[in-house]
Amino acid sequence: MKKYIFILLASATLGLTSCSPFQVRSDYAETASFPSYKTYKIRIDDLKLNDIDKDRVLNELSKQLQTKGLSSGENPDLIVNVKANHKKITDITNNSPYGMYGWGGPFGWGVGMSRTWTSNYNEGALIVDLIDTKTNKLVWQGIGSGISVDSPKAKQRQIPEIMAEIMKNYPPQRK
Image (cartoon, rainbow, N blue to C red; front, side):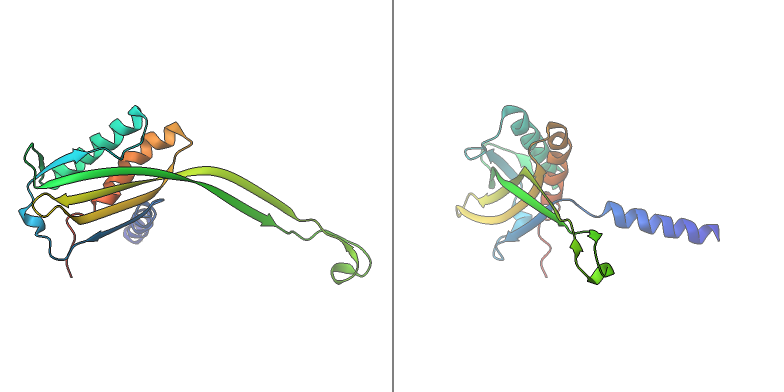
């Protein structure tokens, strides 16, 4: 019996931990030869972040690329272009509970209440482009969104997490 409870708890834990708060997707060129790429150089022309977040993004991206077997070099096989953006999100929640009832019970005349709440926040996204230096063409792109831009503590935790999620899709698994 204990064995079954342990298996059930392990399955539930695995199921909960595999859920990501981020939306991550990637695309790649079918003609690219991913095993031939050995070196990279990061380009940050379009990375409009403060210095703290920029360091977080670049450090984690370098770490992820190195775990994929790539090394930084001056004459690279890939140019890695990193971009960041954010958008304002407005969530509207409407709650219409049963109100007070008047004549005739729940189906008669009466007074009801309805509540509407709105919340505004900024959601950030990171985009990683890998460009083949020989052809000067985009060969892989990863996009991750869902970063809580308004919370410094959340960003500190989420930037490494989302970068790891994005880079999980590199190199692509061809079907």
